[in-house]
Length: 301
Length: 301
Image (cartoon, rainbow over all chains, first blue to last red; front, side, top):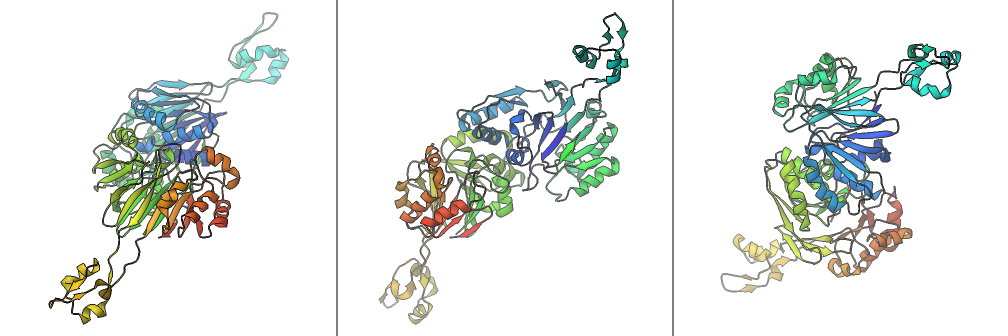
């Protein structure tokens, strides 16, 4: 699993720090999280294989998280896309966006399907052969949720010497990989543990933006491989963070620490801090394995 | 009068060539033409004094000319703007944009007023103390117009030696600047031509995008100081230009030549030409005083 940062700025973007958007990619599929203004430009720059992208997850309906959608859809149509597109968002998005799609993207050569999600509940909202996606209710001024991307459990690894020893035929290997014991032609039962090794644990990535400091989030993201948590403000601006339902970098790190995540990425920086280093230092003081998001970053999960 | 290019790309933008948008500035006022996705980013970069900007002119309702409006309005609100904003566009824009403004820009601290224009007629649609703006009907797939920005006539220049000789009092100078003759206390009439010199001719700037080759445009833009004309394609792609109601660089130059304009700026380049030099060379072969638009360019009119 890999995460590509397309933008990590809060409301007011700059030419090198666009609004929120990220690509989660796994095997040959890509999933977009949020779609601020200009996302299509950054996609072409940092993840041009948009035919792999069929599912878009929108955390909430503030403009800096969704103003890029109609432009992205319009350009996909002009570039000849035919694959359908699925958008998972608060129910209002469909009402707002459909008239624009109908007007600006005439004869759209693919279908755009909106899936209404309930940002207030922690639920499975999507799954395919690669992964499952769960909503993570957050604390913001309007209904908002993060997303937990959880890899599907992988198959167990065959121990080749053992299957050769028992003369396990090829046709029985899929059942072994799935965890079943093996029964020989003579009726002998060989336990799965003798023939296979456990698969790697499925990877988990949690995206949490935008949100105030919110401890109820902790059990839902416990021990994830990577947590992206918004860090709009530095600690001395905590009053402003509270007032706007945002977090400080230190608060993001406290959540990471309490949830015992493996790695923290902070982002959604206010434009008042031209250099995110000051935010990163505050996070690192609480949670050492912290990093700051920057356009074009690729994070291996 | 000055024109600042914010973007000069046709449909598919790049990080260094955004969709159509320009600022016309004169004295202490600024006027925006078109507003493609990301215009607010380029405005902050190349013309940050947005409080001077109160009037936006939209040529037509293709996304690459208007997808940046809601983001611009939203960010202006966040940055504390209180000046009202006026948008001149095809009547459908208001219907499309108002629900987005109402939803995404809650408690907007300024008024946005839409003024419906008829892109099919050549008419005065706006004037203030600085200039007049006229629509220029164009030939495109949907109703589209360019805009002619015409400086208000300037005052005549007083010839100081002459007004001193005739002892013209200060209070009579405004009438002289406006072109009136002067009557002395003894009743002697002194002609205005003796006391003043003509003002410089008012500057005229014509913006024509998007359009197919369209000779009906010529009388409306005759001898303008500067013509911006779209040049989406090179001459060998003329069939594609025709099919999409766009122009080639050579066609843009032919219009410039026939209208005897003083300077031609070409833009709205297709992303298929990474270097606009090839388009510029085709234009220059027909009209020598041609230039290609590039983000951040400032053109003195």
